[in-house]
Image: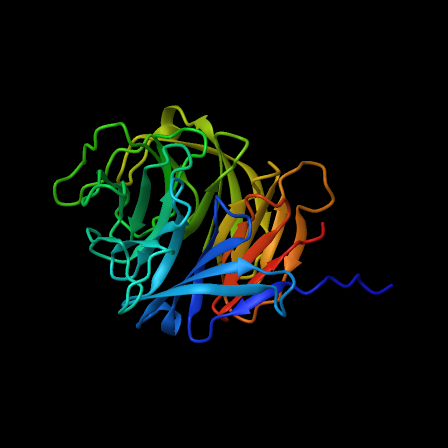
Length: 354
């Protein structure tokens, strides 16, 4: 019996601009944002696309507006307090805030620019609890906390001595953030704690918890939306792991020779293998505690369950892209709707069947 035919995804293409990240609006269920870069982010301009779902149109998606930047864009996050504003992380280390309703005669310009990072800013995340606050992380190893009203960062956390690829607020605790790095660790920080660096020449803040997540680079993480201390990670070793961060190592197992110090812990509750190349993005479902999606350099997006006793943890494979899949995100309003973006300059929106 032939496999069932799945309806083709809604899609839109942005020729010349490879996608790095996408984000669904927390205010409008049919609005997305895309962060993209010319020449795959190696050199050249960036572009922020504002996309709307139009199910009755030819491809189902429409680019409403775009903003050009002088350097590539690597991540995007919608404001939690203003429905038309969003922040982007740029390859020149800057963080830019755009308002989609403001037009400038000589081009659409950001309403604010912060430039404190000394290397590529690779991730930006807006707090869904403390809604006037967002943060960024950079390849220089730092995390910075911002508020739109101030011209300088509120706090700088020297989090790692290697590239920080992603940093996210806890969706449960407003002062807790997590980061993952090229050093293979997942670290959790309390931003209320004073930043006491261990070394003047190579400062690294003391994390509340360090999870030795991989022997290779960790590229992505996401907090579970229902289980407060569960975090999924993915990286170069092609495996997705789910960590229970309540577990603290004691005795000899608690010692660490690496920089950063603090408590060592984390129990691996799920080990999801199947991707053929590095995992670039993980995203927990906002509607189901056991379901997460992953994007990979193997040109697929995969959907997994962490339920015990099921025949297979792998629920679905989306293989409609022809280049590295760099981003995936679940719709915040419509259960089961998933968006994926890739270096093939194509955004797909679909409902996987599982």
